[in-house]
Each structure stands twice: as structure tokens, then as C-alpha cells.
Image 1 (cartoon, one colour):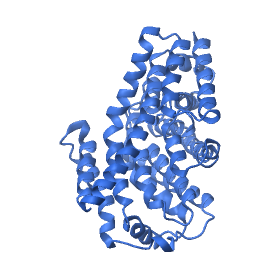
Image 2 (image 1 turned 90 degrees about the horizontal axis):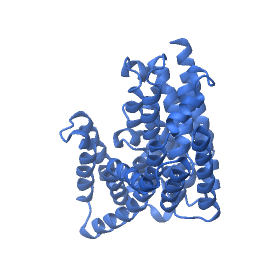
Image 3 (image 1 turned 60 degrees about the vertical axis):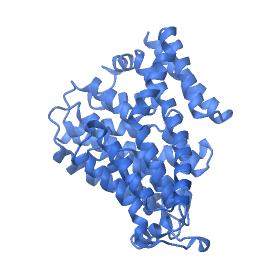
Amino acid sequence: MIVQTFVAFLVVLLLIAVATVRFRLNPFLTLFSAAVVYGLLAGVPAGAVVGTAAAGAGKVFVLLGVVVFAGSVVAGVLKMPGYREQIVRDLSLLFKRPTWVGAVTGAVLAVPFMCCMTAFIVASPILSCLSDRKRALYAAAIGSTLSFALVYPTPVTLAASAAAPAFSAGEYLLVALPLALLLLIGVSTLMGRGGSPAISPSRVQTVGRRAWVPLALPLACAAAGLIWPVFGDGSVQAALLFGMAGALLLLTAEERHAALKWGTRHAGVIIYDLCGAGALGGVILASTFPQDTFGLLDGVVPLLLLPLVFAVLVQAAQGSRVVTAVVTAGVVASLPLHPVALVLLIAAGTLSVSAFSDPYFWLVGRTTEDPPMAVLRHYTLPLMGVSLCVAGAGALAGVLL
């Protein structure tokens, strides 16, 4: 059964690569079809495959649908003339390189938005008027993913910490925050050989300091939703909707219509891609893949690296960092590792593979307008380097703590 599961996994990864790179098929169609093919090859009952895929897609929509929609509309507001130009002018007083602006913006937005993709969506219109737009966007993608995977409390770190009953947020942050900052500096420096974040002369119109309101209002509402969860588990989603509504009120009726139209169209494409990844992840998790993988690794991989290797395989299989953290935490909870080391190793696994099964990969490609091979080179490979650094820190913590 183990062989059958892994053969199905490898076949599906190959099919996804061919369908997307060679034939340029829509990610949702590719991922949902891959979910059905995987289920049939892995032994999931034929009568349950499509339903399981649809249920996996539905779970992702429930989790991220509102967040992505609100973030996309806020991004639509920031695309209105003068808003992003003013924000970039202000940021350029602190950061002289586009990659610094991108990396810091992505990292800062990811935590209150509780979603690295939403952070990237909101940041992208701001970064689009920098002198080196593509490099800034790639830096923002890496910065947002790094922050989302490492900084507590995000869905990834909350899920990973569930594997360690003795987890201490303060102790973890003493290690994770300096590590995240060092990696952010490293990424920004290595990617940032461009010029200053200049604005094109044809786009110099600004709207003054009120340009920050559409950005600050959703952030403030999201932070309030975390501190005061009046709507329970949906507090952050509700807070982002309130922030989105407040941002829209700044605009004229015509601008409001344009922002909503752009944001809705943009959100629809992203949500479908997310649901496709959710379908594939749902079918993989409904098969025996997690149990087979852990059984295969146990006794072969050193105990200290077991959470990392397992998380890498789960991440490669289904693309969602949150799902990777949840599944890995449930499987490795009994391992006798220090809580800080355990969470860092799981976080490193969630950062390891961002490719064809990851909807963020397709979002980055669509935003930069680069082909998949370029996204692999400028986003996936640097993120793998970040993952190795986090894994090294986690292994060191496991030895020293």
C-alpha cells in the first residue's frame, strides 16, 4: 500500500508539472483533476473521490474566502490614483532599495492579515510603481511567507505549537523573531542589487497621508479581531470586512465601483486556485499518505529531523502551509523534542516547497507576469534556502535546548 501511495503521489506531481508548464492549463482545473487522479491511483473509493475533493475545496473556501476577498478589494482601493505613490514615497524615506520595501511590506502585513497571500495581494499595487517592480514583488512574496511561517501567532505557528504541550510563546519568540529578522535582511540584501524605489514621472500624483488609511484600517481591525474575538473563530474575517468597508468609504462612487470590480475579479481567480489546492490536499489527506509517509520515515530518518522531512513531503504533496502544519503536528506530537525546536522544524517544512501544488506559486506568477520556470528560480529556490536556514536553527535548538 505504501508503494501504491507514493507512486500515485509522484505520478500526480508529474502530471501537474506537465499540464501547467507544457500545456499552460488553468491551476484550478489542473489541481482538481489531479485530486481525482490521485484518489483513484491511491485507492480512495471511486464513489468518494469527487466528493472528497469538493469537500477539501470547500474547507479552503470557508477558511480563506472572506480574507482573500477583503484583501483584494483593499488592494483595489490602493490601485486608485495617488494612494500607492504616496505610500511608496513615504517608504522610500526609510528603505532605499525596492527589495527592502517589498520584503518588509510583505512580512509586516502577513501577521495581522493571518494570510501570506492576502498580504501579497495588498502589497502588490503598492510595489507596482517601484523602479524594480518584479524584484520587489518576489521579495514581498518571500517576506510574507517567511513571516507567516515563523512569527507567532499565525495559523502555521498556532497549528505547529499544538504538537508541543509545553510550548511557551515567549521562549519561542526570543528565537523566532531574531531569526526572522536576520533572514529578512539576508533576503533583501541578496535580492536587492537594484536602484532606489523611484516612482515613474508619469505617476507622481499623491493624495497625502490619507493614502495610509486603506492600509492601516484593515490592519487595525484585524489586530482588534485578534485581541477581542467577539465573533469567535471568524473575528479576523469579520474585522477585515469592516476594514474593507471603511477603506471603500474614502473613495468617490465611481472609484468605489472600480475598486470593487477589480477586487472581486482578482479575488475570484485566487479563490478558485486556492480551492483547487484544497481539493488535492483533501484527497491526499483522505488517503493513507500521512500514515504511510510517517511509517516509511520512522527508523530511517534521525529523530531530530523527522518533523522536518515529514513536513517537506506533506508540503510538496498539497501546497498549503497551514495544512502541512496541522497534519505534521498531529503525527509528530509524541516525539521527545524541545517545543522551540519542534515548531521551527515544522515551520521549515512549510517553507520548503512552493511549486505547482501551491496556489501562492501561481499568484506570484500571475502578478509578476513571469512563466513558471522564472517563478521557480526567483521565488521557489530562494524560499528553499530560507527553509534550510530555519531547519538549521531548529536542529541547533534541538541540540542545545
